[in-house]
Image 1 (cartoon, rainbow, N blue to C red):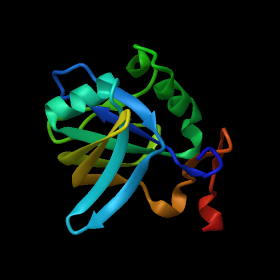
Image 2 (image 1 turned 135 degrees about the vertical axis):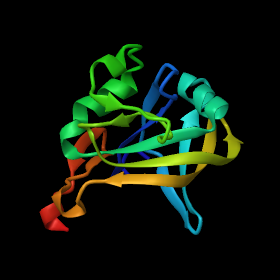
Image 3 (image 1 turned 180 degrees about the vertical axis):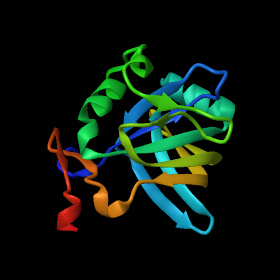
Image 4 (image 1 turned 45 degrees about the vertical axis):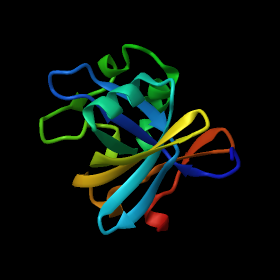
Length: 155
């Protein structure tokens, strides 16, 4: 699958009073428009997964091309990753929003889970979306073990 380029996101969870959790994922997919639903795949050993299952909400932060360092940081397992990025949280959110690194954020409620091998597939019904203007965004992509972008002007 390393030859299949895909978008890069950071899944976050944790309420305003909870410790934030998050990790980089490339396994994000739109499942349904009615109701609007995404799926993400999280390793079963992940503390982020534990928190998502406990809280039953999460945020999918879609990263822009300038957010390579955030993608690498949240993939690293660094326990202080939230100290190195600007983020915001609110009781209205599914999880922390990466203020400078995400071009769009989908806040989701867990609607279903499915265990597959060493991962858990989490289906999230979207209840809130924040998005920059699509024509101004160069999304971050990952494939062939490298980051790249898809210039908005090319679209």
